[in-house]
Structures are given as C-alpha cells and as structure tokens.
Length: 177
Ligand code: ZN
Image (cartoon, rainbow, N blue to C red; front, side):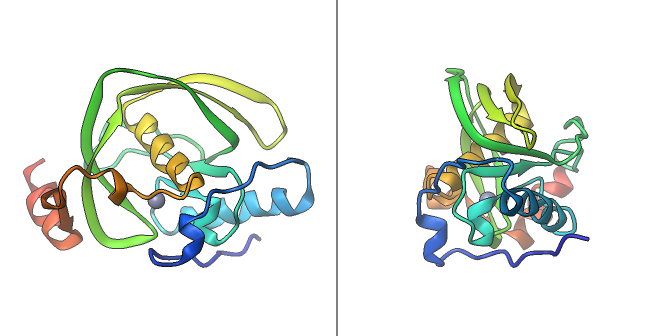
C-alpha cells in the first residue's frame, strides 16, 4: 500500500524551483514515488499531480483525466505516470478555460492553453511515448508541465479579474452547465 503524500501549497519555495530530469527511471525510489503520487492524486480528486507538489524535485507527473461536471466528455484514463516529459509542438489555437490546483486550494482561474500539443515522455518501464494530446488532457499536461518549471496557473492568468473563489466558481460556473 503506497502512502499518501503531503501536498505542498503555494508559498512553499519547492513549487518555484525547476525540477531535475530523472536519470534512472528504474530506481526503486523513483518507482515508489510514482506509486505514492498515484495514491495521493486519486483521493484528492485531482486530475493530475506533479512531483514538485509533494516536494520531490523530479521531472515527472501523473495525468489522471476523467469526466467531470465541466468536462463530461473528458476521457476516463488510468492514472498515467509521465517521466521526463517534453512538449514537441504546440497548436496555434489557444483555448481559455477554468483551472484549479491541489497546491492552490480555494481559487480557480481562467487559463489560456494550447488546444493541442505533441508530447513525448517515458512511462514507468522506460518506454518512450510520443502522442498528440488535445483539449482537456492537453490542458492537464500543460498545467503539470508548468510545475516542473516552477510555474503555477496563476502565472498564466491574463487578468486578476479572471480569478475566482472556489465557492463562487461552484455557484457561477458549475450551475450554469
Ligand atoms: Zn497544479
């Protein structure tokens, strides 16, 4: 049974540090960290988590898309570990939508992201994957990728007027859907 890790919140310097590449994917410490990240993101109702959010400065994250109220057509996927991820190409089309973050509780922001991206990453067995991600999954990837560079979604919001409390988000946005 993997332990649930503490999620560090905005203000902790670890969230602002660039993370280091993983040199040995097969290292037991890294493999255990993958399991612990999955064990942490699922009960937190997150759709993604990056290693720096649990104070582990490694270039890896979990993408765990599933249908939500906002994205009823989001693909249901097994929590997928992505190690040493890269963005190879970005669509010129930009889409704005609401994001939250497990490290920034209580706040939502309207964040512009590329509608589609071509990415490369290693899975936990060291196999290299190259794929095109679109829409919600592309958004999760870009959000988590930012964490590896010490960025959070607040850095990408175009106006502070596009930040709202979770409470108002539930009232204004979810109930209109
Ligand atoms: Zn986040």
